Image (cartoon, rainbow, N blue to C red; front, side):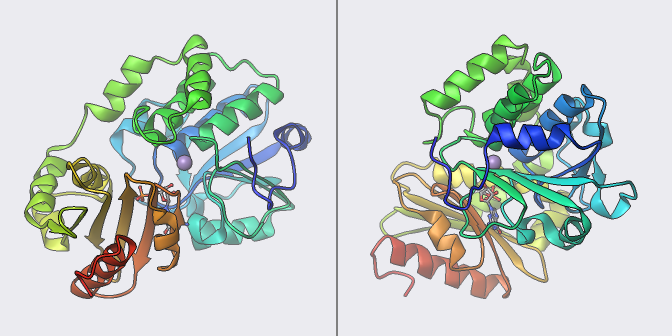
Length: 334
Ligand code: 5GP
Ligand code: MN
């Protein structure tokens, strides 16, 4: 359990701090994933048992993947902009910095009397009063699970289901490099406490939209294999998104197709958003794609990272292809 040097507290201390507050805001990152929402809702489920006024906030006002609706407390998620309650303590989960929580949440955080981070993304700065970051944890929701233990609430049922969702999604259903013994042990505890692994898996992985399937066709058609097939780079355009009737969340699984190709070591997927291009990196060979993403102002984990490029799609493709080739030590894309 190696925490970052920026960590200045323990989960016990965070539990103690939370026990002293009545009005708690829990925020995640922009483009929330299963770990982000799962962590928020797991912590919410723990704190409501203690009679706290808990608000779960969305960093951006964008439609959520429909699978999240099955999680207890999902109907309470509101965009930060719509929040007008009291925020005695601002807790950010699965998000290391102001950039990841977005401007509106950062503004709310700046006004909060006390601030806390619980995360597994390593960064070199601490932005909140208390900060606990464990990059060895497969998911932030595992840390929230532990935190709920220190709060001494009943973790069976809602807390378990939400925490399990974060762990299941961030490990790619226990397939990625982060699916280690500790992750399986935590999963065991959650299942023991009532998380329905099969039902949650079906909810999150067997309900793909037709739009996402159509986009997968586009991503495959647009794909370029570089460096003798060691890298796969692809994109979807705004037009392809519109024609498919797709929303952002329909793009989430596309990178997995690129990564799954035999021989591919690094995969990169780009999504044109008009004013900028959003990108995802994945690696299968230990290449630190978070370091690559950081060069573009993004970040994430060694094997899965994201970034935003403020340039047109054509240029962004070139930028990314160059970076990928450089990382693989081949001269293509130069
Ligand atoms: P994804 O490619 O699924 O959007 O993100 C992969 C991982 O990288 C996730 O852990 C996510 O939180 C992180 N990540 C994605 N985009 C960014 C970004 O722009 N900045 C930082 N710091 N992390 C990101
Ligand atoms: Mn996460």
